Image (cartoon, rainbow, N blue to C red; front, side, top):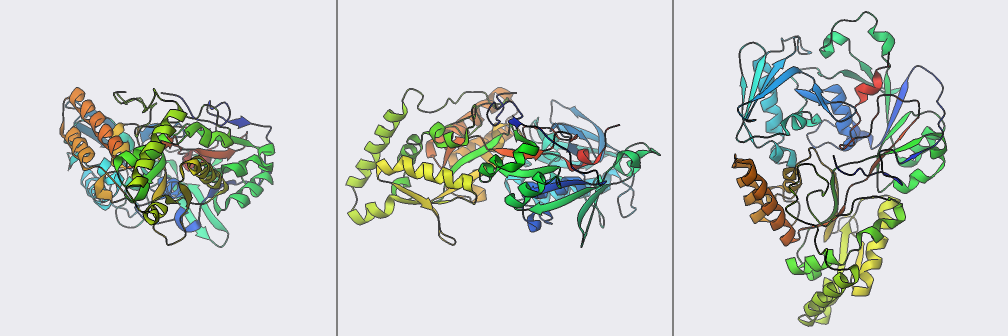
Length: 494
C-alpha cells in the first residue's frame, strides 16, 4: 500500500506510552478539535469532524469501517459488471425513518438528489463519471458510468452522500442534543440492516460527543474524562508533546492527501510559471519539517502522492539531479533576472508574499521555516492579515480515494480556488471519457505534468493527522483516510 506516515517510527502508531483507563461511568466520550457549528453542520461542505458525525447519523449506499474499508449500509451487497462500467446494488429490507418502504425508486431519487447537491464542489467533480442512476426490479439500484471507475464504492461511502427521504436520519447512530451535550446512541439492529438480537443493548454504549479547543481536549483527556480525541493536524501537533501523552497514546494516520501552497495571485515573484517553479525549487522540504521530528515523513515535489498504489509513476519527483544548494542557486538567478526588469518599488512589492495559513503553533513553526529559507533570496513570507488578499494558501486536505484523479480535481479551474491549468483540466476530462486503461493512465499523467508545469500548486509533502486514543479503547484503527467511524466505537466487543 505504500509507505505509512507516522510520528517518530512512522509505522502506524507514532508514540505509545503507558495508559490508564478512565472511570467506568457507563459512557464513552469522544472529543473533536473542532467548533460546535462545524461538528454538527447541516451542509454539503463538511469539515473532518462534521464528516464523522454525518457518517454516524446518515447512511449511504455503503460506508467505511474502522480500517477504512467499504462495508454495506443501505445496500447489503453489490456486483460490478460490463467491464467495471455498471455497479448493481441490492438494497437491504426495511423502511425509511418516515415509515416509507426502502425501495429502489426512493433510493434512486435520494441518491440523485445527493449527487446534485454536490455540484460545484471537488467531490461533485469526482462523481462526474456517473452517467445514470436507475431503479430496477424490486430493491435493485443500478449505477451506470461513462467509463470504468474502480473507486466508486469509496466515493459512495463519503459522508456527504448519506441519503435521506423526508424526515428522519438513516444512520446507525441517533443524535440527541440537549443541555447535557450531544449523545449518539446505537439504533436497534434491525434498523441497521442486521438480524434481531435480544441482547444487543448489552454490547452497546452511548457516545458523548464534545467540540473542544486543543488545550481543553488535551486537559480533559489527561484527566481521564475523554477516551478519544480526534482532529489533530500539523497546526496543533506541537501541543501533543505535553502532559496527556503520559496517560494515553498518540496515533498518526498514514494519510493520503495534499499538503502544500496553492498560488492565489500571479504577481511579483509568483507572476509566471518559471518564477513559481523557482519558488518551489528553493524550498528544502525536509528541513522545513525537521522541527516536528517526523522521521519517515514523505516529502514530495509532485501533485499526486508518490506512494499512491494507482500512480503509474510516469512522472518523477522534480529536480532530482540537483542539490538543494543548486536549486536555490537557479532560483536566485531567476529572481535576479526578474528584479532587473522592474523598478525598486515594483521589486519591493513583488518580493513581499503573504500566506493564508490557518491557526496553531505548528503552522507558526512552518511559517517561520519558510521565512527563514526565503530571506537569503530577498523574499519575505508573512501571514496574511484577516481580510487581506493572500498570495498563497496553505492546502492541508485529505484524499477521498487513492487515485490520481482526486488530486487533479482539487485544482480544477471550475472550483476557482486559485491559479489552475486549463490544459490539465482538458486532459483529465479526456481521461474520464477514455475506456482503454493504458490510454487513460497516460492522459492522467499528462494532466499532472501540465499542472506541474503551471506551478499553480507548490507541494510540500503528505498531510499530518493525529489522534489521542486510550490503550484500552477498541473500535479505532489508523488508516489512509484518517477516518474513524463512531459506530465502531459504540459497539462493545463480545
